[in-house]
Length: 222
Image 1 (tube, rainbow, N blue to C red):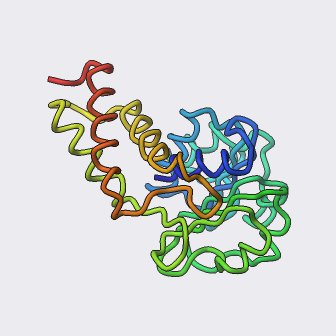
Image 2: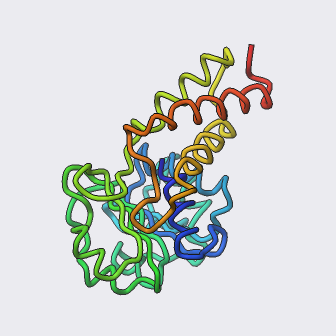
């Protein structure tokens, strides 16, 4: 869902994934999964922060997961806190905890910034404050535009895998699902409409078809 939404948000502001700076808050299961898909899709400049600050190769006490994160991000070895990592960034993706940032922090980002504050029910930054400085704002909440909700992905991903008799879920199948999700709203793409709603009847069939086709292409279909 994050990759689908980010692809469309970047289209809306006229930027490319490979040329933007991305700051991620959260290095748990969700943050790491999102990071892996972003890197696989061409993201090249990413800093990931957890509750101890930026993750970098020189930070002591890294476990295996955080060491992998460090080795694949933060090429400039920034070692400060989240707010500092946000300065000059084009994209913020929060998969962490509530109220970590203020509107003033968002103001330090690049022009036409994209903010995905996905902590629920209280986002990392107040969406209204973020919208004063960012071009695109998304949350995990249903009472704001651009709800990034994984319920949009699950039905189609599993339906496609079952249809193909897939033995596993490959990274390419996840990427195909993200592309299909984003394409559903391509005809009405705007800053306030970067993802479909969970009630859009086109979503599950489109994702299922893309996932099944990719499973066959990847050789994991029975």
